[in-house]
Length: 462
Image (tube, rainbow, N blue to C red; front, side, top):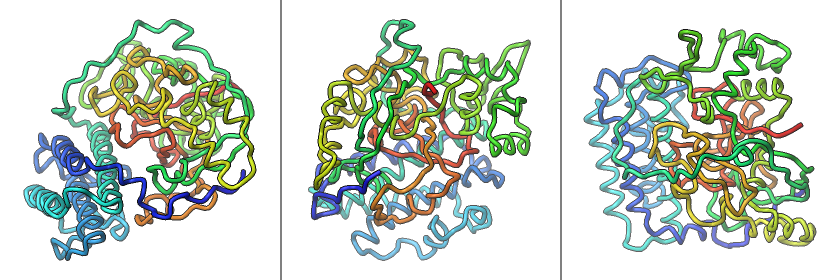
């Protein structure tokens, strides 16, 4: 691995000058946030303490606080709107386990605070944003979108009913049922020197910066993620009781948590059912599985004689088609900006540079759950894979670690505290992820034991 190239632009905010629709996007994100909790009563929001969730009423206030802190206070130099805001909602200072003990506001008070923050932000922003103003609005927008996804999987964790969303109904572009060649098997990808990460000057979080060379061996990656049906075969073959399939850490987790099958599954009449929000339903055999953690994905791979891809392999598969990859492999590796020049030739999505639409990917919670393999066309123009963007997050084998030359962005706690061996990188987004969040360099990260999140996995041949 070689050092990353330095950013090409003198301004750290230059790339955000293109984002001039941010006020409208902030309104859209807030509408989505409010819809995700509008049907819940005040008593429902009083949830027991649990490591994998936040108190919902605290999380709502935190979303507003983050927007106020970074736009009104950090960017515009305004005084706090509430004297107690930092003591209540600053996640960097308020430890997770103490959030249940805080003098939290009532739901009505939190909603009033959210409205006050948003009204103040929209009134303070000029008609045309500078690049720096756009950056901090983008940061608050991305943060709220991420919490929107967290609200959705928290509802699943707590067995609340599915939310009623007013996102415009979008008919997914359902192609003909995939042929075996389309949905099954592997795609072989030649090895070579690959520019992992974002091209300098691109819109990106600090953990994506910047592109740097990694050497990849030839590999074969599955056209589709692992399905519920394939996970059921693993469970039916004793996968959760065979120690040889699990890493030492995975086996310790399985024994400690008394895990005997995937989360939200149960047997009834000899068949598997799974719970989606409040409803128990037959297992959707041809749909990519979610709610599996890194240990389960790793064990499934051992059972099937497979392995998880590295994040570099995943990003290559999601960035380029054969022609573009051959072009990049022929570029010189040395010289100032070599990796940057190569990274600039990558497309942001498997299908090219066109923003995601329902014809490309299952995103934006237009369907409340992962969709069958036939629910999205192949990534035409890429390597011919399916569902690399959207539908389910995909675990990779890679620990979440800084790229060479890492420098923290202004929100220093976004990445830096989580560069530990227990976190693994996930890629691609899921059905609940807002499309505006995504690009194929975007790195999500969770601890290896998390299976409440909307994650599945794709595999590579050994």
